[in-house]
Length: 199
Image (cartoon, rainbow, N blue to C red; front, side, top):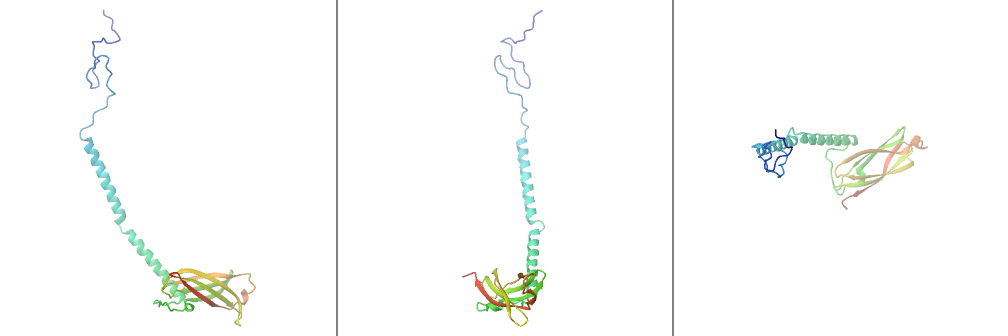
């Protein structure tokens, strides 16, 4: 009986396996087996990529054009601005057709009323820019008693009012603990200066 040698003889080829041909003695075996590429796999990959890109393009178009949400939001915002302008004009008793002129007197731009509140004396003012340029305003108000005597005054600066627009605002220049608060009977605009921003 012949003993089996654990090593193949030099003349013995490496057994075939895993789809590779026999290897001569002493030659390194081939790398680990990897299945060959399936026919048509490259073309399939391109088809998948094309489909994904097309889907993303359509989704982008739908987001921008779909239901016109962007236009609807702009319209709603414009309507809201118009309603606020109408409210201000009504509160300030400003006509819908404002006459804009370079010769418009500044004194006609400002009106004010005063009210005593728990926080002090609150001034509510309306400023309508009748000039053709966006302008800043520097205003001084006076507070009078029942006999017309000036008890105090307060300055106010308002910036960048567009031409033909009306601003409605308020501030409280006299605190609740002021000694003159109970004596104030009326308010008037002592002075008003308009500074066009175009200069």
